[in-house]
Image 1 (cartoon, rainbow, N blue to C red):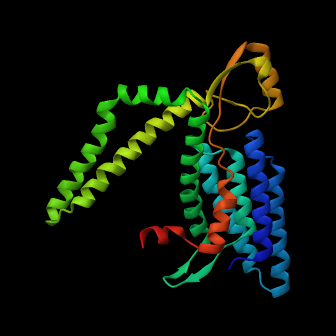
Image 2: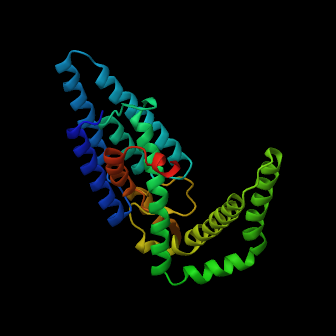
Image 3: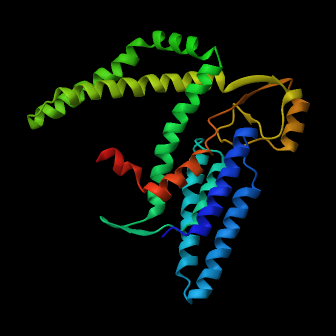
Length: 273
C-alpha cells in the first residue's frame, strides 16, 4: 500500500534533501527529522482511526530497519549520515507493503532495489559529468589504465575463462554469453579505474585552513561525516592546510527512486524479463 499523502511528504522531503545536498554537500538534520516525525504521527492518527496499531508498528519497523541499513552503509564509509536519515524518514512515512502476482513482497525491499539501481545509473552519470568538467580527470584516467593494462584486461580474461569452464561442465557454450561476459567485465574494470581516478583527482583537494568550513569532510576520515564548527576551530589552530574530500551527492537518487517505485514498481523485473 502506498499512501498518497505520505508519498507526497516523502517526495517533497527527499527532494529538499537532494537540493541541499547538491548546493552544500550537506543534508540538514531538520529535513529527515521532520519526515520521520510526520510519518510516525500520521500512522499513529491513522491507527487510532481504524482501531488497530498495525500501521503504526509497521511504520516504526520499516523506519528502524532502513535506518539500520543506511547506518551500516554510513559506518562503511559508503554513505553520509544524512543519506541514512533520509532513507529512514522515507521508511517511517511509507511502511510499504503490497500483494504482487508472485506473492506478498515488501515494497520497501522494492524501493531499496530501485534506489540502488537508480543510484548506480545516477552515480555513473554524475562521475561522467565531473570528468567533463574537470579537464585533469581523463588524462589521469588514461595514464592509470596504461599503467595497469595487465589488470584492466586480465580481469575480463580471467572472468571469461571462468565462464568457459562453467559452461563446459554443462556442455553449453554460447558465443553471445562469452562476448557479454568479456565486455561487461571490461566495462566494470574500466569504470572502477575511472571512479578511483575521480576520487584521487576531482574529489580530493588540499586547501588552506582559512578556507575550511563547517560540513567539509577530511580525506583522512573513514566515515562520511562533515566537520562541526568546533572541529573547524581546533583544526585552524593546529594546521596550515588540510586535504578534504568530496563525493557523489547521492540524495537526488531518493526522489527518483520514489517516483519509479510509485509508478513502475520493481524496475529489476523490467531488466530481467
